[in-house]
Each structure stands twice: as C-alpha cells, then as structure tokens.
Length: 255
Length: 244
Image (cartoon, rainbow over all chains, first blue to last red):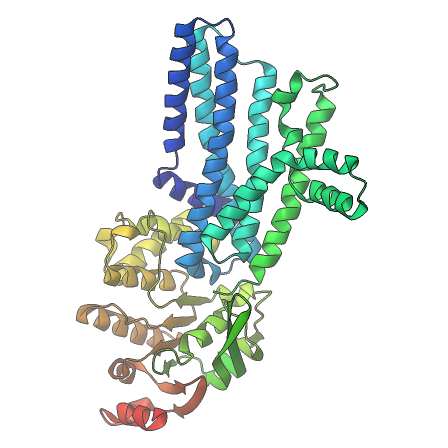
C-alpha cells in the first residue's frame, strides 16, 4: 500500500512537471503525417500512420523514462529530498520500487493517450488498428519496463545524472542489437570473443524479441499465445533481476 | 533514549584514481536521557550533521554503535519500530517542488500507516502549530526559506514522535520563527519528549538546552550537564575555551 502511495506521488509530481508534453508532440506528429499521407492518396496510408505512430510511441516512452530518471536523480537524490522520506519507517526497497512503479504509471498514462490519438487519426483515414498493432503497443510498454529498471539501476549507484542517462541510452541502443551480436558471435571462431558476445546477449535486454510488429511479416516468425507468455515472462524476470541489483546497491547508498 | 558509543566515520572522496580520506567522527560517546533537550554544538563541518545522520540511518558508521530506545540500530536493516517514534529535520530541508504543503504532509502521513482521517487531523494540527495553515495549498517550490523550515518542523511533528532529531532547526528563520521553534521545543520537552539538536547558535542553545555536548574536529570535547545553571554568556565562554 505504501509502495502504491509512493508510486502515485511520484506519478503526480511528474505530471506537474508537464511530462505529458510528449502526448502533444505525438498528436502533432500523427496529425501532420495523416494530412500528408492522405493528400498523397497512397494506398496504404493507414498502415504508414500506424508504423509512424508506434515508432513515435516507442521513442516517446523511452523519453519519458529518461525524464523520470533525470527527475528522480536530480530532485530526490541530488537535492536530497529523499532524506526526509528515508528517515521515516520505510525500507529502501519500498522507496525505490515505489518510484519505479511511478515511472511505469507515467509511461502507461502517456502511452494510452497516444493510442487514443492514433486510433482517432486512423478513424479519419478510414483505417483501424489490427490485433498485432495492439500487441505491438503492449510490447512498447514492455520495453519501457526494461529500460526503466536499467535506469533505476544506474541511478542507484551513479552520483552523476549525465552518467546515468548516458549509460541508459547506451544500453537501450545495444539492446536493439543484442540479437545481432549473438548471431555475429556464432560466425566467429575466436572463442573468447564469442563467449563475450554470448555474455552480452544474456546481459543486455533483448528488444529484438519485443519487436513483434516488425517481425510479423518475416518468414519463420509466428506470433502465438505461447510467444506472448514467454516474452512476458522474460520481461518480468529481467526487470525483477535488474531491480533486485538496483535495490542491493541503493541499500548501500549514503546521504 | 539515545546511546552513542565510539562512533567513527571517515568520508572517502574519490576522483579518478585518487582518493582522499576526510575524517568526520573520531569515536564519540554520549547519551541523551529521556525528557531532555540535548544540544550538539560545534562549528560548521565538525561532525554534528554526520552524527545525526548516522543515528537516523542515512549514513553508515565505520565503527561504534547507536542505540535508540534501548535497541541497537543498523544501517543495512533499519529498525522500523524505533523509527516510527523518531522524527528528523535535516539542515535546510528540500521538498519536492511541485507538491503543496498539504499533499506533502499527506504523503508523509501515509508512510506511517495513518488513516485518512488521522492524516487530515494531524495535518491541521501541525500546520496550526507552525502557523502555516493558510499556506497549505501553496507549492513547496514557491515558498521562502523560512516557510520551508516551518514545513520541515511540521513534518517532524507529524507522527507525534518521542524523539526528535533536529539538524540546525533555527537556520533560515526570522526572529518570530526562532521564538516559535524555541517554544515548540520547550513545550515538547514539557510533554515528555526528547530532543537532540545540532546548532552553532550558542545563544539559542543556551535558552533551550538541558545538556550540551561540544563537538570539534569529530571529537566530543566537553559535555555540560546543567546548562540552566550557567550564567548568561557562560556557554559561549565554555564553547570558545573548548574549541580554541
């Protein structure tokens, strides 16, 4: 209950910081795209808007996580507003997990608004979202779950906001290539290098697995209920492990 | 109430491959009895804040121990039962800028598992005590230093603590604010509460403290057990004699 209270308070503070400006950016982007595509009278204009919309959501959800990281580190850790709450009868894992949940609430809030805007824009074009698009939307949230856990890991040991942001962005980029690095490792005969790439594959978040819409058209890929369950379990386990590490580090932090 | 034994702490400042050791506490011992106001006096940077932070669990001691209400405190596993009866006011408290005073106190109240009605009642009481009730809808980011300090005191009183740890509570207050804090401290002591506070304002310490400890370069140089019996200005003389 206290964790939910912390999460709600963090969510509320972020809304007051006008983080939902990303929704306005998204709306402007989608309306502009819909106008351009409809004026060009292309055959697959709806599909193009969906592609653009989901890519925009993916990027903006990541930006919301980065914003939360900066906000958390600056206001709570650097300005030390955390000392008041941490001196109360509250465990550090409750504090960190509450803020993590608050970040996810902010991401979810913004994503839902973006989805509504996208649906309305599509309705004007006479198109609608397919089931795979809705799963792609859910997987965008999954990516935010992963990147937010990494962001809180870096926040728990780094005392520098820029360093934590750089590390999060770096891992976010690498996460998109982790599968390719693994595939590359299989071609390499140098054993240490191969082991290193295999290690990276298991340590980095695997975003390739979560790009269901892009992979839907590829041969050999079928999005099934089993795939959904496995990938959901992967996201939960990965985020849980990273958060556990973050909590272990945060417990050692002195103020 | 508080028993501090052999408390030592050295800060390590790292810069690339170099590290600098900054001793903050060199094994200090003191006790604060029930129903007293104990002043930890010292110049800036002598270890007062570090001592209070270790007691409240925000800093880890390299050596020594802290007992509150007879229970030994641990940095890695905070004793929540003790902390429920403790409150802490940091020096120059910083609050989330976008929350109003009301929201902030509600937020802290929820941490203590208080019911909504209890939170509402306590909020009104503490805001009344620090004369800030009319500003409860003001955002923390819009408040002056003195107003923030008053809200800091309000949050410290919120859980009706038995022990208050106040780090430089007089900082940033105007003369009326100073008198208000002094009156609150004396009233709390009269109601059976215990207060440990740090300060370098000797005249204020002289007015409220039952006992004082003079801390200098991380060591407790002297304790004065009955401040009330000292003549006016005597505390300043004792302090200067101890630190020079």
